[in-house]
Image (cartoon, rainbow, N blue to C red; front, side, top):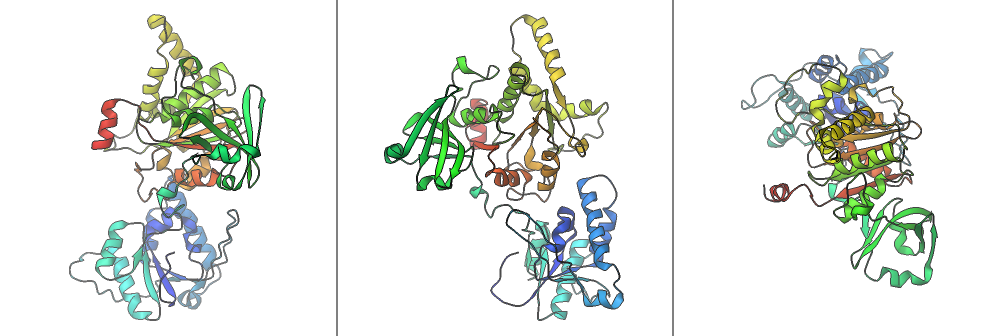
Length: 472
């Protein structure tokens, strides 16, 4: 959590949405104590039913609390229960909880101002924090909530409040890995004596040594502004100061297209290189609307499924978060229910199936594609194993880190997963650009040799769409 100037111990009052968002948040406050108002426990009880991700998280919180209270009598509960040391292995990081958890065991004197009438949960948490400030004068009482309005009301009342920051991948979204790096001017002149070059299977490789290489990542895309033809991809890093790079293929020419699609800018060319590389099992594409994420991913999938036979079929899925009011239940099978959410798929298939031969030719092509493209719902991914599939996950910015893990761990041998999204268009409550599951996987996979990422910058949809994106 956020560091403060004073050295007083802290008592964190948790809002329900924090526990619903991350069940392990109980153990994320290190040596500090946490407090759960009775109203929060009531809200947890109301949210435990159902098969949604939040309902599962609530049930996990209940199991954690039940384990902590096992064998404790009323006196121990009132004195605060020690949080069992919780060890999280995430790379080289270890998290241990050494504080205590307190429950509301008696009514508190809630003295809220008349401007906050009613007994809703937010006001109850504010009143609880105010009462705890009077009782625990030697502690700094802080409300932790993902509800921005609650934090605003707390600031107005002079109560310290902050967002739950443990799930944030980065402090600032501008620090997110872009997947490409511009080589400094004169790079090749400085390294010409330490460069080895060779060709294999029609590809050109270079081995470069030097201190500049230390900041490169596997599958990172490199370019030189002074030479447009100088586009390469990092293939290996035998040591921290050495790298083997390969010249990228040029997909800008109509003669060298992917299912009829050519790259219109440098980032799209890099994206096609990553998507068409069978050595990469996981690829993420970030970009605003109209940058070509879905079209490129689908074209590469069709080429590798139908032309190269690397995968058996394409599976497309996305999080079903409506932009406006929900239109209610949808009839039919799983694919029929998902069809209205897959407008992007249908629009791009229309571009990719502009074949010659009239209506009969287009109908035959559409029948072939329908047999090789499946539409699946994320709700039914748990427990499955995908073998030799090309999976496209659209609108991935609306998924949490836990949901992303659930999907990616479904991949079996020979499966490739492509995640698409725009982190500036998040529709899921309590998710931000720095805590989105898409941001999480981009940051965690950047060191993996079989993963690739590129951020698409230029919109290529139409001049109208480009103007609207810039000016509206």
